[in-house]
Length: 576
Image (cartoon, rainbow, N blue to C red; front, side):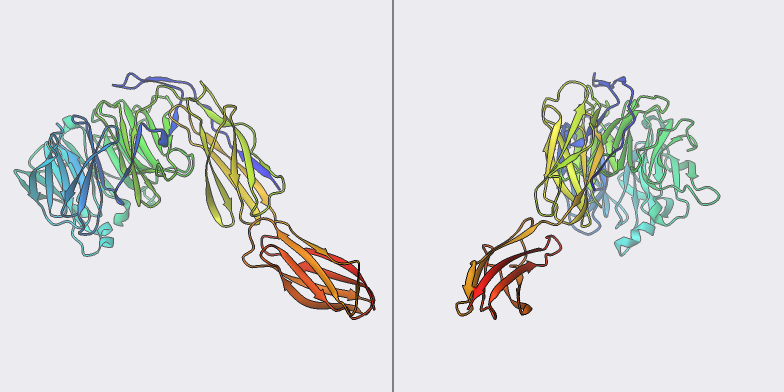
């Protein structure tokens, strides 16, 4: 049985939005595949902790998150995605933050906070701090460096470890007295308001994790607002992944893995009267960032397939302009935005996104400049396949057509495909879309049963992703055949000599086939010795008949999981 299904994405109204500082005009509710970012750099780390963007020197700083005593690194890239250098540390590093003037970069180590002159990338200070084993978070707010520390013997204890908020001043790092359990997250508030944000992750084990805001302008931090989100029944608790303050300081956006994007009033952390539209179905919120000029917000997520992992839109939730959507998928992109993995250049002309694959063993840096225009795409009609009778181990072609609005693409578009069968999901790579929109995906199904082909177009910088199209194919067993040739007549004394050929299409048999041989004559039917097929498929049957007249020899093979059985016969007239 062959079936095909294609869901539809709601059409989006055209729009015009001028991106601050870029002079670019966006026309159409755009979405772009992240592989078409202006630059994508594979990061030489297997863990990730923090991201900071220096718009003065046009540099991007990325720290890993290591929970052992191995050497730590801070990667330094330019705005084109080119690696500049690596700042190496004797011990593991974690948090990273920039001073408000971008003159100093602060990096959290296990036993200190290290400062770098961003003009020269040379250390210009190192401040001893209480020993940390859980990843020291760092934030710059109110003209001071804020950090955390927690000490445990085993990494798994960090999730529920007592964590203390520290403040750096006059060359020393001292405890503020504020503490709670779990890997507390820090983020700066609006620059002009000297505000520091603190959040408690769900993994802390707290029944109702908190979000808090501190006045960071004085000699000690003063909590100005706090909130816990669960209702009276314990539902709706915060599942914090990231938080960011708007440029004007009036709002705080929270990436909540359960609730999506929460928009709060900065003063008391109450819900803002207007909220952003929900993330796409199947997308889990991981990151959030406001552009430096306050015009835009970027919302990161983890989602499968062509479901967008990144939305870029107006920071004003009342603005109905549909967001730019970016889908990340595959070994060249990552498959979702990492927690705390978004940051803008100060003028809003570039968005930097750190993506990850799976549970987070591979990471990429994407440098994204929104395009001048983007257009809708769609799959036209259903997919089809040939040959109509698909068999295991034989080539199969899956064909379809992609349509697009706007001008013809400058370079050939690509679609990706996967096969889903009883053995799991198998990536089939990419197929080129021809000028007329047609494409062909080539495959060789390996199992008997239903195989569902899912074809995706993830978009590029000028084309939105298309809704996936699927097509289910019934895969049968590959045919096998036997030919048998013998003499028309033979004698009892001279015997019968038969030759044959065995063939099996599809996958090569793991072992040479063994064929059963039966003889039927006027005395009855009996089984002869089986024969093994040679490497070239040939075999012979030799027999001394037991009686005269017609003798019929039948050779058969029962088949296997991937091949049909086969049988054939030959009749010889036997004389004395």
